[in-house]
Length: 125
Image (tube, rainbow, N blue to C red; front, side):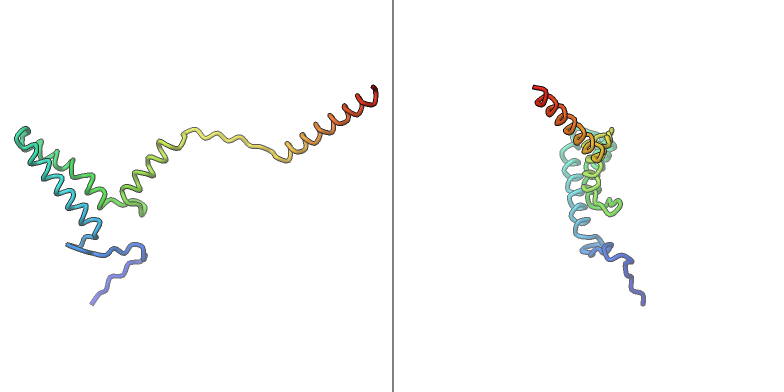
């Protein structure tokens, strides 16, 4: 007798129906429903060869939601990460270093010079 154990505990998925997880099963049902809706709504107007492709294209987003995983992310997390990295984050990152120590020393020197000048001006009046 052989018992299968996942190497990583996070890889465990509970099989609900036909060896599919609940997420996969629901997405499969939604994909079938979408294909049926597309088929019956367009069969009067389009030939069967093009209609079959439209059914597959209409069902794909639901199948992707249920089955595609990349680097541990589900499909919607993957799409969000792609949008965030490619659209929302600027492509040109500009690094402008600031030497805080140098700024403090320069500020101190400037204030000392100003104080000396003001003392000299008040002294000569």
